[in-house]
Length: 269
Length: 353
Image 1 (cartoon, rainbow over the protein chains, first blue to last red):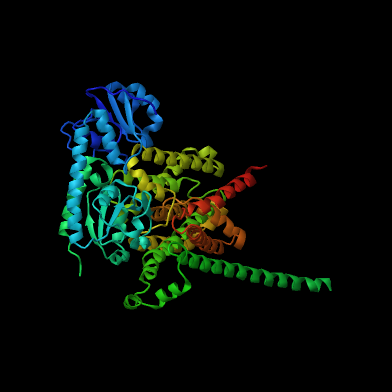
Image 2: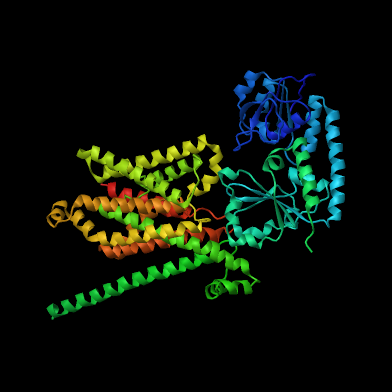
């Protein structure tokens, strides 16, 4: 989109989405300001921020005037969400946008690490993950390679996460088998009726809820007779780092949980 | 000879009329049954008549036995039957509310949605949702009823305050104004509270998807008692609309008739909005169409309005699921396709001179 001349020492960093937030905190840079995820209205709980960054609007609609007032020296975002704002953003401060979000998080980590001059830290993260994934894989093979279904309950539908997602990149790195209907290209399959409940099936079903307070579709399904048709083991997982956070801090938590889940799993005879 | 032919001719045409009347009722009932069938079978998954037969003949233990197809049985018992009952009741309720309004105002342009009662009810429900109050069935019905009561009451106050221009045209204009005012308030509230948008968006366009079964007994109770009281009120409505003085002289208080009918309209509208969300135009089209079919006699007009309301709702719901089983549109869409031109045609008819 253009060349950005990034400063040597970034002091006033602004990030435009949760993925960028996760990556920059993971690289040791607490941003001065961040957008908030659409609909959640607060930072993902797992981000260890001792000083809360200033909120600058929603991730899809950053508050440009507020950002200008903050006089940042670097802005991080993604082309898929903020590409149309690049001409304005780049006049406020040097702006680095990743090509995509989610599935490309490892590339994003390395790109932003270059902008923040923390390439060593990024590499440490990635090697750490590789080692942990090998450990999980060994454990997983011992347990007979159960298939893992990833289900996220939204307010008005239930999603199955497919190959082009953050969570799949981690499961894939650990060599974990997905159910056939989820091991396909694409982001997510959206289900609207409990009559489709069998599509959730897997030996392990990781279930997260986007916003239980404001209504979660799966709770309605749980009240019906369809629910008893599910044979797999249902494991509730945290939505914040599994789905919202797309970076090393979230990956660390996901892998930590995954290891515990696989360890606790006993194949049914 | 000619004079002798005349009575025979009227007798023949009387007989013809009688047959015509019976034929209309027969057609209405047949269409109702057909749309009920469509509503039960269409959707994801599409069911066959055999599935329906199986679930009707087998009681719970034998469902366990016919384990090869339990999902079809579950779809019928858990989703389709509650949905059908909700559709029949809310459709008939909108038909009944529209009938009462059009009968009392003697104007085919009035209906709960063109007067803003439906929108007021929806506004109250959105408010409850945004405030994060637990949506129990009781809360749901109370909020919808209070919203309807507020909208109806406001309209009444405005009409009373405006005594010198107290005609139905003023009522319709005021109603349309209130309807857009409430809809605008709902929209701005949703914009302020973006968290609620996704959960509410679908419901706000009107939907029978996933009607919680625990709402049905309350809905049935409200609807069936309102229908019965409506039949009882017919003589009163007739007298009041033919002349308030005459009604008073016969010992019927016009105010009481107006009040009871108003309460019926609000109860019926609130109850259906609580279950399906705002579905516009049913209350407008149904009573008018019913009058075209069966004539002005009050009891026949009411019965036809109930039947037609139930037909339109189940048919609209069934059709949308038949067209797109996995991602069905809201039944409001076919309603609006029929209802909006219908409304414009009525306005044109009324005001073309």
